[in-house]
Length: 329
Ligand SMILES: [Zn+2]
Image 1 (cartoon, rainbow, N blue to C red):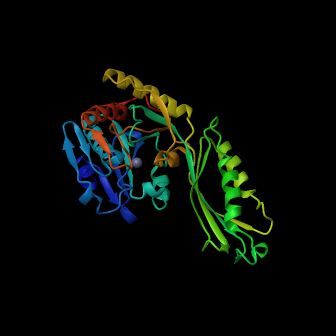
Image 2: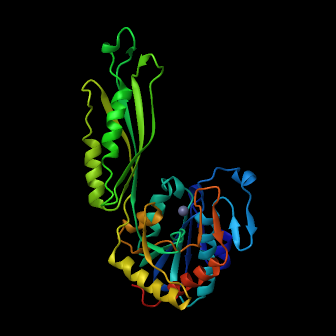
Image 3: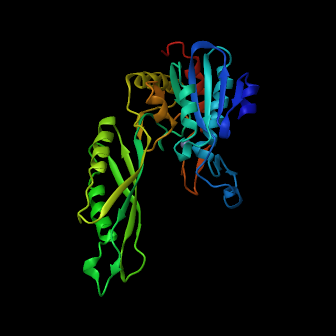
């Protein structure tokens, strides 16, 4: 990516841990182009899931999320030529892990930009995204007391029984109406059938649409109390991404994109995503974010991951027009 961007006249800096930042001169203030170079697939996946093209479709690990998006980015910059805004490119190398090391560098890159475009995949129907849910990953550790299940049961405190109560309480925080989702995805505990379990643990995924919901869920999590007063609860983990709430600035960006899309024969709609991206981190700084500008396809994070090759030049042209837009804030 560094070489591709240099070929387009960018001044490229490779940062620690594989993150990349690049600057291209143009009308100021600059626009931020955001993407990531990692995938969810472990190294070696290509051996079982090789890159292949069938007809107009390309398959392979990360093809859709977001190798094709990076192609859209490079091609969009190339098509925009020199008559465009100054650009700052930031590519994260650990986005799929929640950008733990990329985040501070991305936040620096977002300083002073007028708006940000993220080349994550669009929705399955090809729509762009102006809102994304915030994400948290928590663990609930439960400590009870071990005892013989047959001869001394009353002396024990079952962490597994407590885990069952807590699992139901956690799932009950889900609220379809506001889009809050609390999922106890992994549970473990106990050592043997005939032992009252001394330890148990739940791993929890939380999604929220607004900051207010985030506070509500956080309060509920910290206020969890054991049903069996002799059991102990310990909450770990935390929020990995703030919610990206639809802003007026983002709505304006979308309106421009919709207009350019029409010129290209695309009927783009505005959507929200239940998943997070680096767009959440940028939006939290007050920068207007338009996300989902990558290529069309489907099957992100699944063995069927694929991208429609025909969408790449079209989406690159859409991005190029946005980069040239003199009307953006
Ligand atoms: Zn992605």
